Image (tube, rainbow, N blue to C red; front, side, top):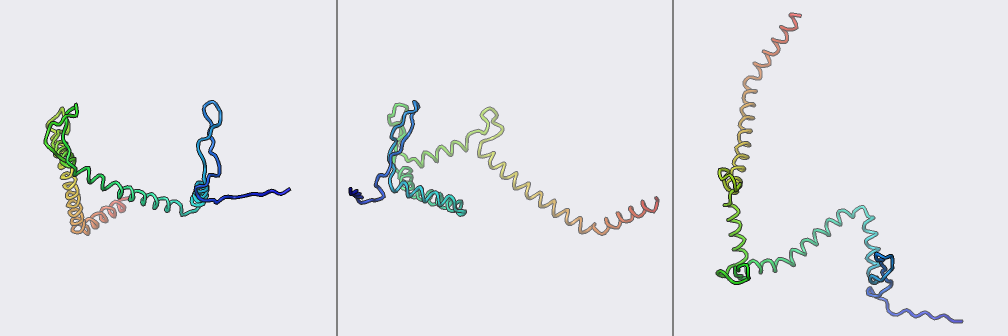
Length: 178
């Protein structure tokens, strides 16, 4: 009895197994197939994840992926920002002049900055005014803190010796009285 096994050409796309799934009734069904490439990728992933350099490698791969996505999407975004469009009403009918998405975004940003921070209390000012006030306040607080520190250092330098003598005299007098 002779057994002959013939193996055709094997490539990464050669199907080697069926991927089975179980539905809600508990019946098995074929979800798809698994190829040599899938098995190779699984082995590579197993080894990479076990390696102690995996976190840095993973971060590097994610950064490269982000950059590639940005590079691929950038031309589409640039085209969308500069391509002429028309404003329309709720029915999709043209209502205005030709414009660009960049101009619409700039107009909306101007509206947001000029909008009141609190619609019910106008004395609080606009969003832009509040942002400027917060930055000015932060700058003043930093400057005042620096000025106070400089004044304290100056007072400490000028009065440091005198304060030391007075404290020493007071402590000595208190100890002598006991």
